Image 1 (spheres, rainbow, N blue to C red):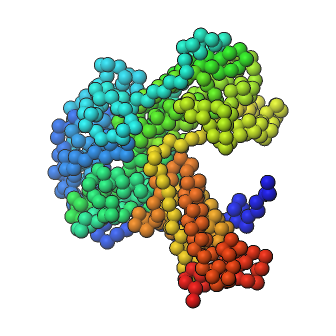
Image 2 (tube, helix red, strand yellow):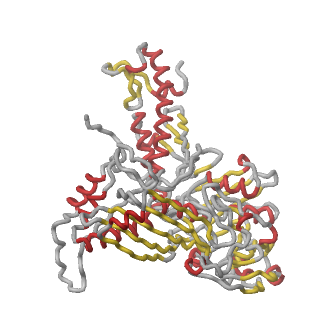
Image 3 (tube, helix red, strand yellow):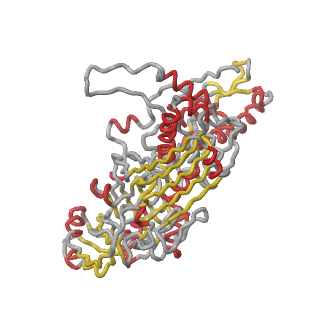
Length: 594
């Protein structure tokens, strides 16, 4: 196969946003200031589980500059992407230390901060549960007594009357028979606590509810489309009345992909007389109020033959979802689907329970369930290798999936083009010089060692995870690429610019992407999550390029009097292949040849 050569693709170039970031001119949501702006701060719960008896904010209203104090009673909406279990402010009861119970709106941030300390909340404390294993017991306190009233996606299975937000089960083969035939059985228990994303930019939102019913939002989130969808479903605002804008973002890691503060701040703007309102979490609030990655228990039992073949696996994941589980119910499903990792396991049983506790709510964090399932599975592989007495590499090689032949735990046969696991493993061994002992360090307290783990990443995305792109040519044949791809440090936009420049033969500086993603201007894309941005949005761009080329070549073929398939785009010109003197500038075509 002839090796492809590119001018831009695969070449290191400066990031498209690098200049603006290093010069400090990049504009983040925090930098947005609008005429008449008000500032909001949150009053949060000091107890983990309690009924709200009374909220007295009379003293707060006496602070100069305080415009209004609102509580959950003022707008009893429930919002969410998958589970629909979240209130904007606590209604009737609080479910974790840090649960927002009221919001103060003021003319200045200082006035709002002073006022929140003067809001007095009277609680009737309730028994709390902090461990998901305890939360599963029949006598555990119920965190959501009215779960059956929550709107949720049909893909999930909440169990009202319990603390189970979602139950996922999967069985393939005969697990008990597999264990009976096993020569070696490994049983282990694993635990990981909650983990915060710790992005540099804290969560912050600006919202303006206009008198004509139009809503403008600026947010530090990863994606514009899901925000608009949640707002429309939860608040009943038509999609075309919601404008979501995302400027530069200082890190996301999944923590800015699920449910944010946009709906709350939008309602605050309306309550404050249709003035714009800004909410910025403090760093402390980022750890106590904003969602984190779920903690989880993993209970695994694995059966192997003495030749290393993995023949039975029974694994149970119990996810600590905290007080609200909107995104984590989908993480629980992904944990289940990915339980077999890179290996062919003929007999497997998976149960994944997403469980409410009286802790901070949870959401996605890098990998979306796959690191959790693999963290359990890869340790099982190492322990099995040690017990059987074979090399950790060999036990993995024996059980590796084979594209075109192997089936996953869902019964889906892998496509023939699903990679080359054997080659990946061999390349890894060569790169890390697996059979060469690591050099001994001079410092006796330091130890250098080698470890090996395999990882497969698959999509845990819904059917509507679409992407689209619009190419808009200017008079000089420069191109505006209208996309909603999020850009929060991963470099995706730079790579997409390279694709456009490569395909049209344009200088990189002739391809422009607006740093602000805008639902009214950008083409639709579902989300920038799950390693999909470059792949999915890139394919949409390639399809747009194909469409543009068809139109360009159709016009050029009439001008140059040759078939369309004899034309090519080179250095901003349409040329006849093999006859470079027969050409027409691209800018003459895109504006309509005359």
